[in-house]
Length: 278
Image (tube, rainbow, N blue to C red; front, side, top):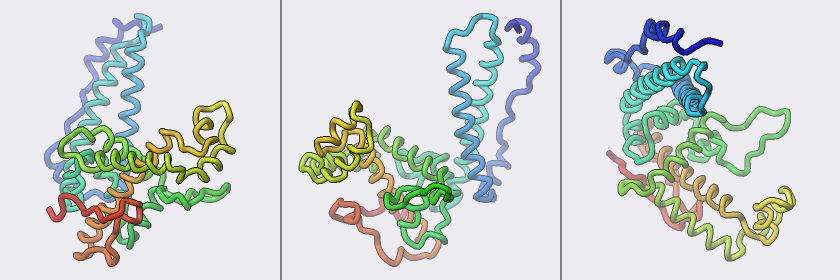
């Protein structure tokens, strides 16, 4: 088996990651949506690889394992991640839509670039088109032997957005994380009032009777985790409604023909787009 010491001279000869030049950053605005989608996917793939490499280092492998190689891989992967993120940062700031996204606490350059690259506003006359494309329309079903009716990569981005909003809810500038918390209280009240009894009993027939979820479903209540996911999806759908309004106005110079009212999602009143116009 290779010894770490025998690898150190080879490591010194390895060329470090080149930094993204200013010219390349300035050219990010010329990238096609396909190229940006590739960079976003590659960024998250590298992030997963780096985390796995770091886990290998921290797992206490025997001394004869090439720790130096793993450290080199982790350091250079982190460097390349940062370079890609810097490029997507430049890309996301080249348009009013991107700058609006970046004004929202919890939406960084990678998430903003992913949204812009995946969503074609000319194909989304209403926010419902975006919800369906992102897999957030509960009425859509994926039947066997048929093509997935939503974009899995956009759905993943939306999941990450929801998680990000939860993480920043303590930030004084946060908007959507706090709204999600309000929604959780609303969902809890409806659950306690038995409003979800029918849905819960239906789900009780689909889960194992020895699970924690069954304990709630069987008495006509949704589990806390289920309510949490409902609230988070609601927050993401609200953000996408605002995203649609901004994107539509940027594309056509006017607001969507039918203003979106949050009462559709049970909030009871319209929640206006934050930070817009900028």
